Length: 102
Ligand SMILES: [Zn+2]
Image 1 (spheres, helix red, strand yellow):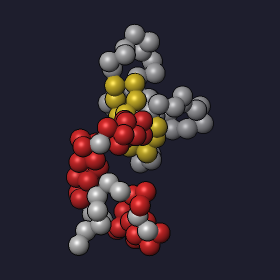
Image 2: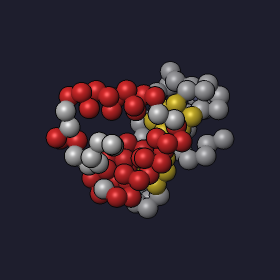
Image 3: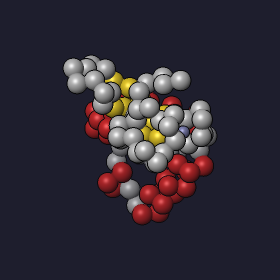
């Protein structure tokens, strides 16, 4: 039987530990489906995911509606970078902080 959904505060320590194992091992495809389902069904989860994964363009002051993905993979260095952070002069110069910088 699956653990009852949406009752994590009541989950046992063993169940929570197993959840961490499951998150570490589940397929990327299934994890994406689970995250999408959470965002669609739980406003709190949607808000948390928006904070983690979506940002606004820091270079556009009048762009309340211009939103973009917070995390981008750099085609130059292969590292993931946070588009919501100001760029550091010591980091790879390809990290523009703008959507579709390439
Ligand atoms: Zn880079």
